[in-house]
Image (cartoon, rainbow, N blue to C red):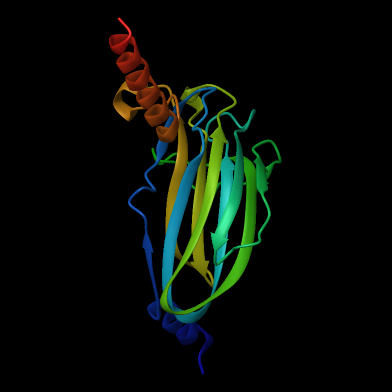
Length: 195
């Protein structure tokens, strides 16, 4: 059977759905996303899927961002933590950030796994991105899924920016904000009760 036909068939038989929570997180230069989660579900197969997670310098090629990926579950349960060092010098020019600027160098982790699921199979991981230089350089992190050489999903996880008004940068992780807000409400209630 034709090899090209098999690749197209594998892609056609594999459905996937990413979580709506997988929106790009914008950070100011030197900022940190706090702990975030990524989730995607696959259904169908059988198909070998390659996942690439990376960080990239965008403008200067000098100081790269870092990212820690931990707690892989579902299809990649048992995979240990992966640390990405933006100064490793790996070519990332095939990837673009949220603003369309191509990468220069950085770091990429790649793993291949088999999907053969009648019901949806999840793949999740927690991640934390650390910007190292200024937001004007637009460094970024990304995740990509491929079947063969066919890209089936690409997302920018985090993006440096110097325009935090337009891009609504995070300054603390959402769970942290909720915790602080809850603590503030408790303290306000105690203050009123004992006043």
